[in-house]
Image 1 (cartoon, rainbow, N blue to C red):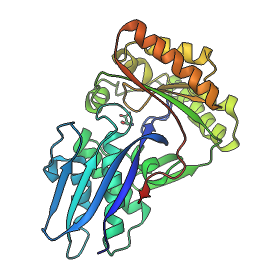
Image 2 (image 1 turned 60 degrees about the horizontal axis):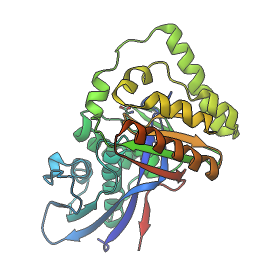
Image 3 (image 1 turned 90 degrees about the vertical axis):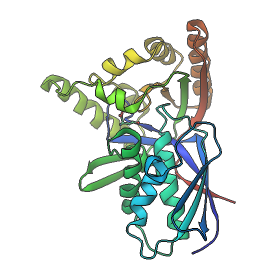
Length: 307
Ligand code: HSE
């Protein structure tokens, strides 16, 4: 066993509008801070430095669930102490649970003398998502671990495709209301009409091609979702205004971040991303809902070890 590892585990934007459960990207900000260290005490000890009142019982904790899955595959599992300082608010739609789960297994892989593949880490981290929402999905975990934009072609068996992308500037507004992922999944219709599916396939393919070719106009017109957004956006006050006014301000497009309530917009440059932040603020000031904004960038590395 080696020494203490300290990491920054980034927020992620899942779905990227049309790619429900299959597309996601990592951002530079916000991020969680986590420290993992070997412990004389057997088992897993979890300490939260934040005020989110999350359970520190390993089986009930997102990072704990992921680590317990990992430790089952480790011979003579060592004692581990994990300290988490969450900056990504749970229930924000910014991959808070994925940051905990992926961060925990990434950090643990650095102190346990055993080789793990990227796919192993994704698989373990998905157990954390199951603790959080009851469902194993990898569209936040994968970009968190790998950075950049990722496509999950399948989770059983795991088939992950990292996508090339031009530089992207990202504006996020987080209205201070909580939307539970489990609730936001529960309200979705279970069936999709063929004509809706065809439109969605066109947009997903267009978005992937737009990223790979660095074609900003194609990215913008593919950021369209006729299946999930019409249902979920009802939970987010101001959503339609944020979307239309951000596009008027020059954003390529955007929509709900993960299961919401955060809303994100992609822009070509920092000046546009800041103009978008300005209109997002204006919308929520006028509605009278507290909010937080981030102007950030595509994070190409994912989780980072810090000194
Ligand atoms: N793809 C998941 C969902 C992400 O939209 O429910 C949850 O953050």
